Length: 406
Image 1: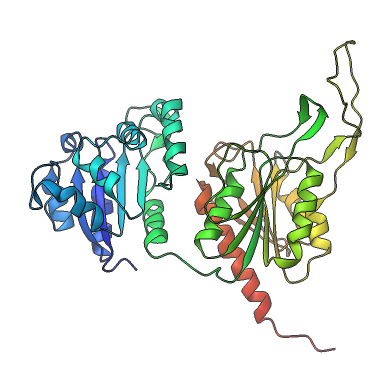
Image 2 (image 1 turned 90 degrees about the horizontal axis):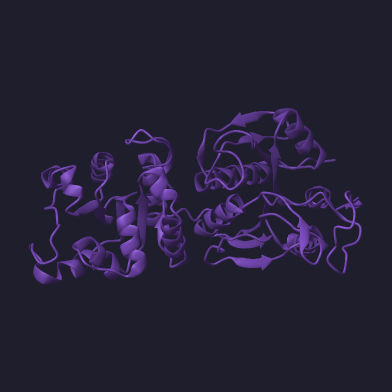
């Protein structure tokens, strides 16, 4: 699928450079045409000759030298179908976000008209630095693509997020950008995401820890695969993926209305939102003052969106989510059967890497017949594609079943 695809590979100075050598070798073996740019710092870890041999082309590093002369950055920016930066350090992220073009790689990225894929790798504290996170968020908003770093032991001995993502994950993202699946074209996918908030008074509300990252990843994956996507989201700090129909809601009742209104015209529903089960019977008009040591709050049940979708389901594929802290498989099987789901994605939020606000998840697929498939720790975008793969397979299976004659 990569035969004839043109890729400019940018390499910055990090210990993960040695993994980039294997990536370049893999891409070359898959038929891609490669040009490599190394920063001066990258050359402190691996010599350019290594990448010259692996790519089959001279390695570029100096803005004003090389076969293309002083405008080689324009050639390297306009030639490829994709620019990838792997590993990407905090330094190059800051340069791109700040519009700084003071070396060959940064200049090529500034001049690129093709997609740019960035694969960060750095110390966990550097990665979690608010400045780095701000730069990543800004670049995402500008249309740059990212492969999140993995979690584990880092070269410096620290534990946490920062190691370069698995090469399989990076290659998968390259494939999706250069040879994207369009297997959802003609289908409408509705995704719910994030928490809901239930007002107690004008300044307080009931909510939960959902960040919306899983639902937004599903919406992004479905849009990439050609679907018309409707994303209905509670309050989050995330920007909606490009090309989706976005509806912002706050309360469970608002989400119910938005979902049920659109349900008849969709083919698939992936309901990943964490909807509040209860709301105050009556929200106070004014801020409640603390006059006593104790306060009672009367709650009433919210409408069960997923159950109502299951009851009124016709030809739609219905995928639910279950975040559990105990008896995961028992509760998940009951939910699948009780709500007429085609698939349930269940996870134990007490597991490291599977809780709220993380970039990864550890899920189990639970089916109506009670069978369960356990998945390993993976990036939420990768899991999103797995969910869509399964939903599409279920849909095809239903369409292929012979009609029962009375």
